[in-house]
Image (cartoon, rainbow, N blue to C red; front, top):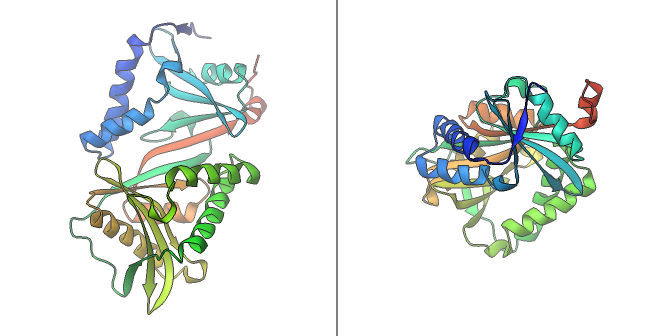
Length: 294
């Protein structure tokens, strides 16, 4: 298709790819140490990617296993009308779906549903807690009930995003919690909070300080369902920024799954910009639109 050919040597492509990735992170407001750390994550497994060119641009693709499913990834695409080639390559490797990581807009992948966003914002140097809201540490006795609620919410978020079944989401949740909280309540660098108003708990927070250079990751800023609609969602974001400064970091980062339009609207209004966006689509859907795996 359009003279596209696979190349054996990545050298002609890789330098330009890394510079484009870095430029995207810098444009999103990342300091240089953070941009470099994010680049390292973006190029994990790069030696196993397949790189192709038509002489004017580049395509980089790969496949991985995700809970028993083969997933194709389009890591880079600068060849005009090269998307069809990349999708066909993924199909030929047995992929059931194709995903992309995007920085700076959906572009030609606007028809791929959003599955996940990484959001980030710099925090004020002296971030105060919202009036009327107090914050205390979650106690070790409260941790088991909190953990069960967090795991259930995480599974529901994954299922709503549309990439995994409930059974697969439960397995992923178990793996992720074990990886991030290997020592449970006592895992170093992690802090757990309870937000209270008028002496009543209205939500919880879970953050990881030093997740990346200068960055606290907000794993969860949860307002209890019965307390929603009272302005606590915006207050919870302020608590996350306050906790970031308490941990000695300058920026807060977190993940939001696709399908959570209410949360995305809140994050837009509180200044948390999209750093990375992950989109994916089933190859069966693309076959219906004319993609042939042959």
